Image (cartoon, rainbow, N blue to C red):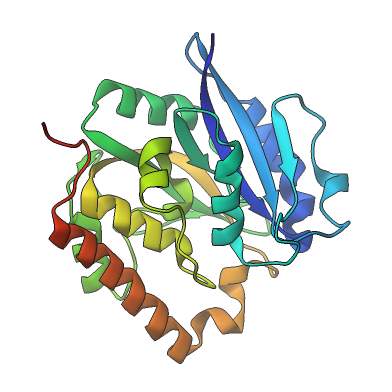
Length: 255
C-alpha cells in the first residue's frame, strides 16, 4: 500500500486559471517507490468560477467551501485537512508552481531525521515576463533550530528567512497546532512560526518553489499592508509562537 503526501491548495476565482500550471509542476515530481501524492484543492467559498479549471486527474480531490462563504486562504487550507489522508502535507498555492524534485527532497529530509517536524526550500519570485528573481538572506542548507525563525522574523521587519509557501510538514503536527491561523493574511507565517516554536525544521537551498507575482495576488493588495491590520496580525502571530515556546511542548514528544 502506497504512502501519501497530501498537496493542499486554497483557491478562489481569480487564481483558478493557474491551476493547470500548478498541476503540471506536480506531475513532473518523482517520488521514491511506495510513495504517491494526492492533491486536495479547496475553494474558498462556493462559486462556479473554479471547477472549470480543476484538472481531470484521479489523484485530485476538489472541494468547495463547506461553510458556503469565503473565509480566506487559512480557513480553506484548514478545511482541506479533512481530506488529508496521508502522512505529510505540502502547501501549494493555486498560483504557484513546484520546482522539479522538491517533493522527493522534502520527503528525504523528514524521513531521514524523525526529530524534524517540517521542511522548507528556496523560493524564487516568478515574474509576469516569465523571469525569476531570488530572495536575499537564505539560511544555510540544513536544520533550522527551534525559535530561529521567530528571532529572525522579529529582527528583520517581520520577514522570515524561510518561505511559508514552501512548507512541507508532518500531518499530525499541523493538526495538533490547529492548522493555519484564522487571519485575513499572514496565516501561513503564523503556522510557520508556531511549528518552529515546537519543532526543528529543515531548509533546502535548492529551489523548491516558483512564487508567482501577478496583479491579483492577495499580498499585492493595499489591504495587505494596512498599518493597523498588519500590526494586529504581527502581534497575534508573535504571541502564539511565544506562548507555544513557553509551554515547552515540543515535537517529537519526549518519553
